[in-house]
Length: 112
Length: 111
Image (tube, rainbow over all chains, first blue to last red; front, top):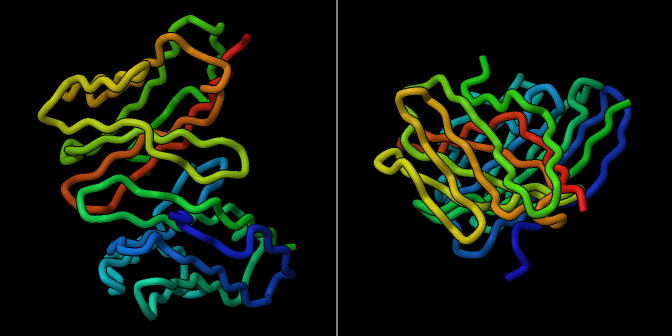
């Protein structure tokens, strides 16, 4: 199994630009999570899906953030417009019911 | 408000000795706890978990202890090896899939 695949690995963009992060979960997993890692707050849960349906988006910081899961094998996290304080490592994770999360290797976002 | 706290940002231990990583939580509804290990430029990987109906779970060199009255859990690594050098995150959930993570502790095992 290839594991959770995230792209791009690194993204550098200017303030105000739109950023789209992509995730392919492990085949057969029915839960998908987006986390953000910062030094101050550790790993923060942004949103999670079950069977492609958003279940809890209370961690999404602002309306500038949106996430979609159009099918079981793909999800996106979009930031529009991006700001320097959005700079962080964004992780996608997937899991089966009642099993631990499997994380991708993350996307390091830098907004200048 | 940080519901899961790892108050030690870093820890150094000699190879062969015991490493003890600590985690405190504030939400008494948490009933499932996990530890993840993270190497640089990689995602966190699952290490060990414990349900609130237990107070100890062991897997090889790794043991997790849960003290519900103190709202405290700890991860013991015995013996510590240089390959254990990583950032360790504890996480908790309350019957849902909403896992809340701590800020992590960087463990350095000295050869």
